[in-house]
Amino acid sequence: MTASEFRALAEFRYQIRIFLNGSEEAARNVDLEPQQYQLLLAVRGLPAGREPSILELAERMQLRHHSVVELVDRLERRQLLRRERSQIDRRQVILYLTPRGEKILTRLARQRIAELRTAAPTLVHALAAVIRSTQANRRSRR
Image 1 (cartoon, rainbow, N blue to C red):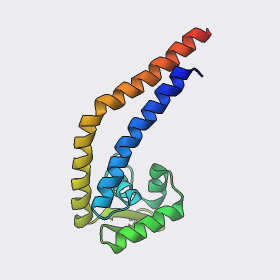
Image 2: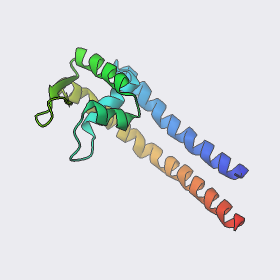
Image 3: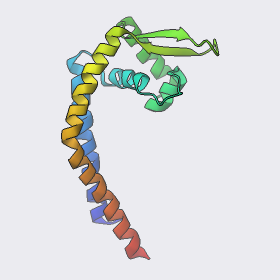
Image 4: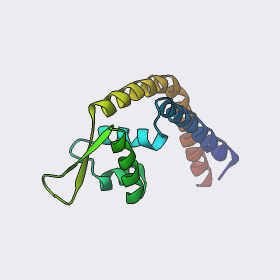
């Protein structure tokens, strides 16, 4: 790898971390841990046709099953999330946002989308630089 590839990749990661740190701070400002916000967002933002089961959310969040169960337990105690047995497979638990959870998530998501509108050009520029540098390196190796 070239120095420009490393620089481009490091810059892209830096820009992502700025955005993610803002998300983490916004979550803490409403008394949520960052992973709790991520779980609420994952439940609400699943692709159409996917059910918000523990297994699905563990995959989406790249966490172990027991870690998601613990997050769900905490969110359920705070009445932000509720569990129901699946009508299709009674062994499976499906998660739903409560009205309170929906309200908090909507407020946070609006803030994050507004921030993303501002950060998007920088993120896109950093990603484009990564792609350009790797393409240039690939062409020079031929």
